[in-house]
Length: 242
Image 1 (spheres, rainbow, N blue to C red):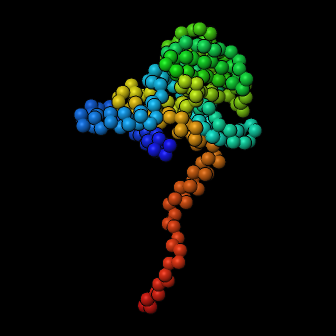
Image 2: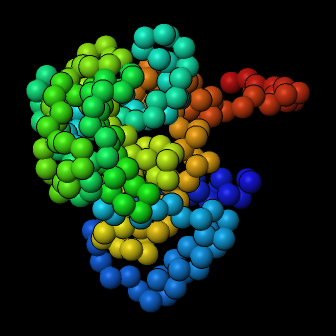
Image 3: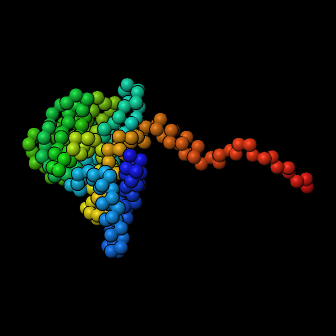
């Protein structure tokens, strides 16, 4: 299990770097080494579904709450947040993240007004708290098609879009999924490796870094790590007299 986590974590660290890199042909030796690493990782952790179909951000990036464990803004206790929240004004257009079919369009519990889009191959996106739904059940949409408007229906503290990406039924970090999707389109081999960042072991332990308590905990951990450890029973040194 430790090897699985380490390999998955390695892939997670590679995602930002690969996404920022300019696509360029890789030398044959590098391609072979990458292929060997991918095969080894696939033996330990099967790669998640192909998410390259996700090409479009549903709204402009204005993240107010991230994916993972956080303090629930209403009940004030630790709870897992299965999507990413993007703040916006009432009525701001929401678009489909990729081509697919609308499999749900209506009101559901804490989601309020919500749309589910099935992109095939086990990839589903959800768009919640909508002010208005503009896509009907069964509609085939293209990436970038307008499907609704930002609102505050359901369990919210203000207007925003709650956006989820689900792979074979389980939620993953939407921002990571979009980054992996971009890498997959630019370099399939690198994309297969980067996809391991969406492995269940990593996603289940994710923390919402927009949460102030998580930010403080991270700062404390970094401060502790950078402090020089004290030497126990260190011999005293006589200071030379000048």
